[in-house]
Image (cartoon, rainbow, N blue to C red; front, side, top):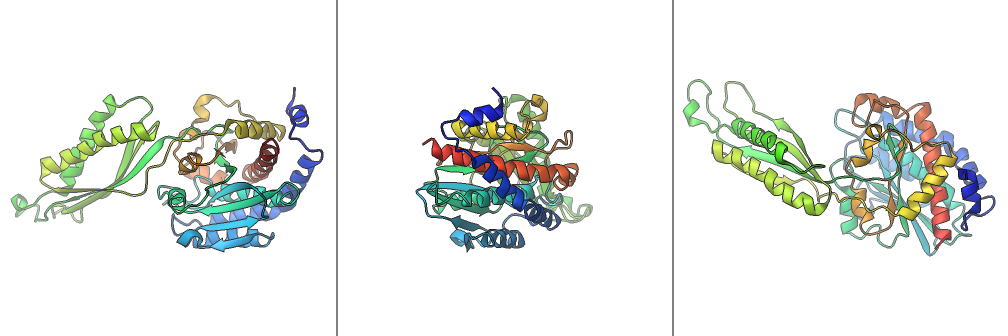
Length: 389
């Protein structure tokens, strides 16, 4: 049975539904492309996405949504609502960029997809008893914006939360790592490196010792875990013993439970640096830990069917579909409401997320097609999902 036949035979299928959704997405496509390209050309880092939030809010307001800016007290969060039905569909818009790389994870495409799906669903709000909600969620790239919103009560009670994330290839199920983001700081004592080296306490030595310990730890780490980071400050001058050094480190594991055990071992490596050098150590979480993902398999099955009917192909070799292992604060949302987080391909492998080459692919023909297909597939998925309840 082909995808079109499967859709037509679904108990939830309504004649004309697919055509109406495609017409609604098609009518928006030029505007969605402009929104995506504008975000791409004006990247903003997490918690600083002021223009992105404004442009997203303006787009939805122009299509009849009631928009709440500075949602839950966060300056760059928004919530846009259409309808007042009993069945609530939530779409996530991420719009933060990466330091030095711009939109190399394609959050500009995510925002356009979610806006397109939300506006398409709004046409069905009255007849299908829907409330369509779009959330502009700040700081996905390490800041845990969705987690902070969750802590204040956002998303609770949604029947389904959805988004589609760009990737080199289509990949249906999100299987992200749980992750902890940590700021590490050593404080020693400065001294002239030639005249008075014995009066200094070298904070850079502390980092070197810690990184050696981490390198040795990796050979004993469980399969499927990751430890990686950067040193962001190593000293001020070559003739002054470094008094302060800083870094940012991520620890990833298959679940929050496994993450807790792994973090203890990683922290001991940083403690070793402090002990060996005589420095003071400070380890500070940059956000709440990101959770593993709990996928609503019924919704995901509907998404795959609709995406395939639009020409999407989920048969990429496994080594090309590994973006579904990246971490996301959408995992925390999935722990409290039904959720899906499929990846939509740009056909650009080996260019992959968090590379400048991938950023270049996040505008253009393939990106525009992903916006259309992602918006249509998410909208059709939501309509079938609520109809079958």
